Length: 191
Length: 63
Image 1 (tube, each protein chain N blue to C red):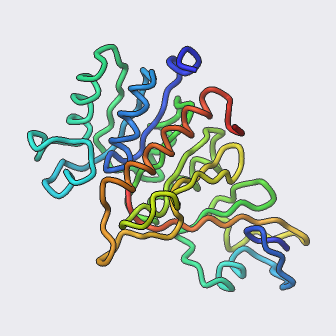
Image 2 (image 1 turned 135 degrees about the vertical axis):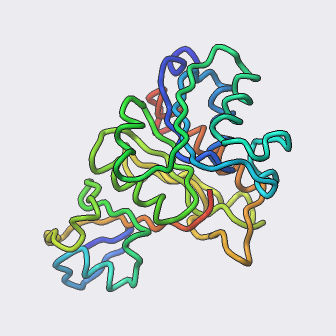
């Protein structure tokens, strides 16, 4: 599989708990080309689930993640965008990608990215919905909507004042997304 | 009409009617109508053909 996917390019929208961990898994399985995008800086409260270290607090997530990924393999081609994603820049930022990981925080931003990419391009997208709390990890699934649209999560556990985002379920979902991306890139979506 | 795998007898004319029927927040959803993802700017105007098959994905927060 690795020889099939190493020349492909993956876009990651949002570098929080999902996006930072998706990037690490993709790099570990041989993806060399990533487009990573986030406007935010690392905070102490991120460290319970995001891939960053305490030394990264105050740094842009794009810069911090680039350092982490280059520490894993130093022959990567990383395109970083430290900007807020919106409907005016999605297409420009991700136009050369073979697949996109939706790893944003707010439901409005998630649906807007998926709406735009899926209605205006042919690029497949692997999204996430329902990752909060401590319910069973076995409830997190990958669902195929169509050949270009996949969604991972339990589809209901929202991040709110009662259910916070915690590493175990966030990383389970991130790796569902990474696995589905690998399957899309190796033309293996139905297995 | 089949919506998320379930048959409905209601006659919906537009996607907006369906969104209101299920009390959905249109900013939080993606709609696939007969295998095509519909850009949300057309939710108000697009006419839903008879016997359509819809998949409505609703996003919750967390990333």
